[in-house]
Length: 149
Image 1 (cartoon, rainbow, N blue to C red):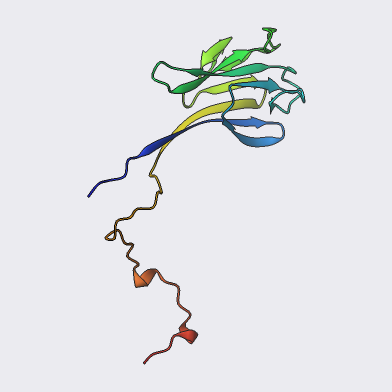
Image 2 (image 1 turned 135 degrees about the vertical axis):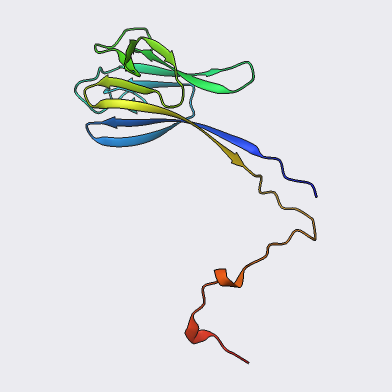
C-alpha cells in the first residue's frame, strides 16, 4: 500500500498584547511596519510606542525555508524612542526564533511563534479498496425515530 506523502505547513505568527487587548497576526508578507501610526501594517495601540516603532522583514535561508527579522525603527532607519527589548536584552535587530518576546513599551509586547504542522494531502484516490469504516457507536440516533423489524 502506497502512503500519502506529508506536506509540512509552516506558519509564522506574532501574538501582540497592548492597551486594547490581544491580537494574533499571521505573517505572510515580505515586510511589516509596526507602531501606533495608522499607516503601519501592524498597529500597536499604546501612547508609549513610537509612530513607526519597528520593521519586520522576511528572509529566506539557503534551503528555501523562511524566517523573520525585526529591526528597531522605520524602513528609512529612523530608530524608535524606546527601542526594542528582546528576551530581556536591548537590541536594535534580531532574527526571530520561536518564543522570542519583544517589548515595545510598558504593557506592549509581542511573542513570535513558528508553527509547523504536518498536513496530509486530500487528493481523491482511485483505489477501490480505500474505504472509510464508520463505527455505529459514533452515530447520533434519535430514539423516537428508530424502527425495528
